[in-house]
Amino acid sequence: MKEQQTFDVIIIGGSYAGLSAAMALGRSLRQVLIIDGGLPCNRQTPHSHNFLTQDGVAPREIADLGKSQVLQYDTVRFHNDTAVNGRKSLAGFEIETQSGRTFMAKKLIFATGLRDIMPDIPGFAECWGISAIHCPYCHGYEYHGQQTGILANGDAAHHYASLVSNLTRDLTVLTNGKPSFTPDQEAHLAKQHIQVVAKEVGHIDHSKGQIRQVVFKDGSAMPFTALYAGLPQEQHSDIPGQLGCALNERGLLTVDDLQKTTVDGVFAAGDNSSMFRSVAFAVSTGNLAGAACNKELAEERFLN
Image (cartoon, rainbow, N blue to C red; front, top):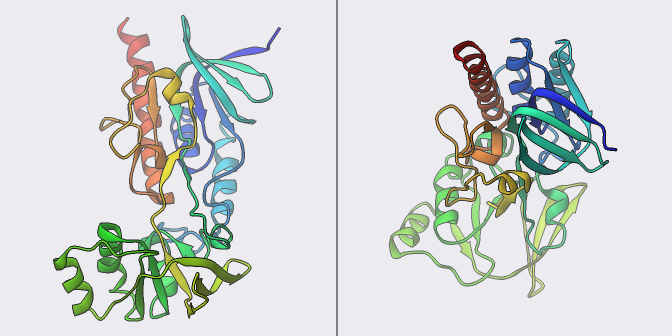
């Protein structure tokens, strides 16, 4: 028989959003279980930035410190495992893990993040989060004034160019094929002296994740220090979908102002429900989800 334990709240995902939610709940004496598989999306990123008091600290260091502080609250437990299935039950929700354990809870918080879908470009994945980057606010300052590329086309490339041109004048857009800019967008790029290269990318030449040059399929190459790219993403966990949680047009979990999903008793925080992918924002939304979840538990007990 599978072992079952019951908690007030199960938090799936134990990085910044999940730990922040657990702190709010632990301080309210809620019985909380955090389930985490240990594979955060920023595991290759050497330093976290744009987070007050933690600027320049390694993401793993921030998470480890957060975990140690959260687990000082006696009602919070951490389970190293991957949640694979979820279902509604009479008592609330039932979560099954990869190891075969089953846990019950009255409420759920998903802090499961997103999975980046890597382009079919050799060398890119090894540089992702190091010198192949997605966020000017998280990484841009460290590469300001340096040879920078934007691996994107159309609206995405134009948007990146508007932000990154403030950080460096040595900027090139790599469309990896035929450009798809509007006449106005072409004019903006030309006015800022931003070169557009339409060649198809062959591979990324790098050393331990630090880009040296982009090599094109025609054999030519261009040196770069950093390369911005906005990758397609998908939900890291299938369980919200199993429970019927709605997604918006961007593929993000739909939440209200208190991080509640479209399914009663289920909340979400962090990257899985916001286009703002940063450690600081994940901590913020996790704290809100934890407080809102506790509010529901308190009202259900107090008013009934």
